[in-house]
Image 1: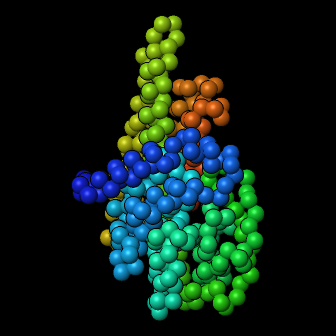
Image 2 (image 1 turned 60 degrees about the vertical axis):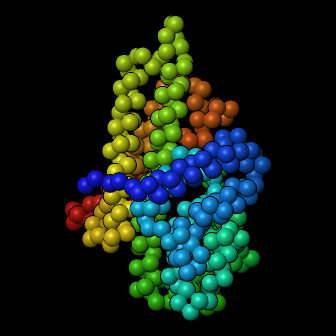
Image 3 (image 1 turned 90 degrees about the horizontal axis):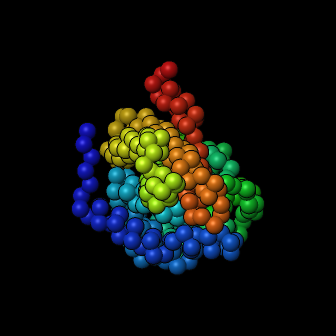
Length: 338
């Protein structure tokens, strides 16, 4: 199957890339980490102005109502920039999930303010950790087969150690009560959770591809510029083999990610299998990209002063998020009845 994107999809992705180059530079990311701030307001406002925060929301609420195969390119750009803001958790997971529970329009004001960036959302489904919980105004949380919407005032947060300190991770403590329940039909909740988890896998896989591509691009540039014995280290055959293997892994994984996004939108019977395959291949690609960039750069790759460390940390983190390679293999085996 050949996947091709429309001009408007490609243009939106390119506009997002240009915005991220301006507002999410390595210098800005390092400054964000050193400041220990909860958010990057200027970057968030740029996402809101472009409509990125409403990519999966319905047009009736002021969103763009994009489909999975539309915003998968946006997720790839987020990975390419190692964006610290939890855009996926907010725009791709939380808003569609809350909108599905907005049967009586009781959450319309929250949704509209989330789309325009005034309020922030994040989500934890079956995980005990929440990305960007300290900057969120509301969290969507799953407990005892029920879906809850909990305001930040009712939550106790504890920062968790992470390889990637720009991707802020928290455990949450909160008390269940009838006022927080937004969906009490356990069958509907289970269905919503399952589709949201698949969407998270595909979106995270797309970010993995973006990170892997950026690592490869930076490494190719480095081996062309770094000289030993009067010639670029990139002319060595061993270096070329590492880079070629990484490039192949990325180009092998990328179509699978696009296929999975298409399957989710179409309700394909193999959507679940495709999502697991996409995450497996994307995780393998970004793992290899991390190893290759480390080997080709040498000791400088380990230093905080060198920007490569931003993407190395993000790649290692995303590779294990929403199911690492081993977990995805188990899921694929289950889908195939093995």
